[in-house]
Image 1 (tube, helix red, strand yellow):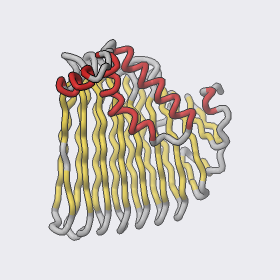
Image 2 (cartoon, rainbow, N blue to C red; image 1 turned 90 degrees about the vertical axis):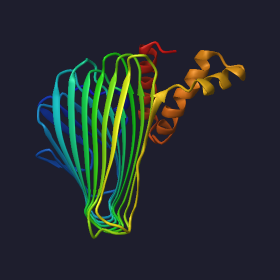
Image 3 (tube, rainbow, N blue to C red; image 1 turned 135 degrees about the vertical axis):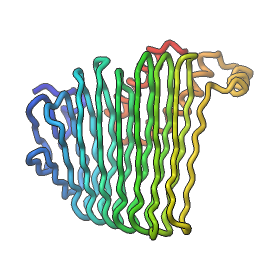
Image 4 (cartoon, rainbow, N blue to C red; image 1 turned 120 degrees about the horizontal axis):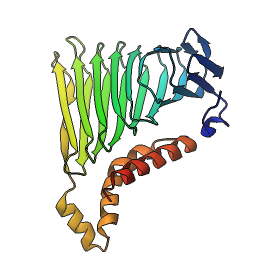
Length: 301
């Protein structure tokens, strides 16, 4: 089985491809269920996997970084469930790299126990039609999730993303940050929901959505929603979507930058903060190449 060269030197790799899987890690894999109990950095590569379900359980006090790379050339649908036991910490980075203009649906459900901590970083840089549904349940007190997403659309790409966080215990925290770029005819459609149920006081739920449209026919739609049934909580949401600010562009031009340089600098304000948080250098280089490719493909510079 051939795997990408950037994974050849990695010690902890699990591959789901076609009708088989290969486990080159210390995680225990049985019937598409990964059981992680040790501190490690794990790479999960999924390419045209014929089965739909991939599940992962992070044991109590485990501290893990997982890189999930999805690549598909045919229509695919995946159901992924990730459980965090008490005091577990998971930083999961996902990048989608379609090689054809195809359809991909990823439904992920995260269950967080008491004092667990989850970071979700999503890079949507692929072609075709993509649906991503991330649902997070904060089931135990002091559970926390931080979601950071970068989406660069081009050509006639369609992205439909649903993010839903449910605060089901006291003292829980959620933060969602979405950075969205649409060019050519791409359509980015987002539904972002935060729910704090009655009795779960001292919880905090925040959403930030910013988007930039780089062409006449691009489109970004964001619907931020809060459902709050408790008084003693903190909650905020917002969406700022628009084209490149002409005053900002004029200011940069007045400082001696060309229009191409100025536009690149403005766009980098959306992409660089996300890329800076990628620890693995091979994955960072992969994402940087893909961002540049998507922007250059759109011919907006």
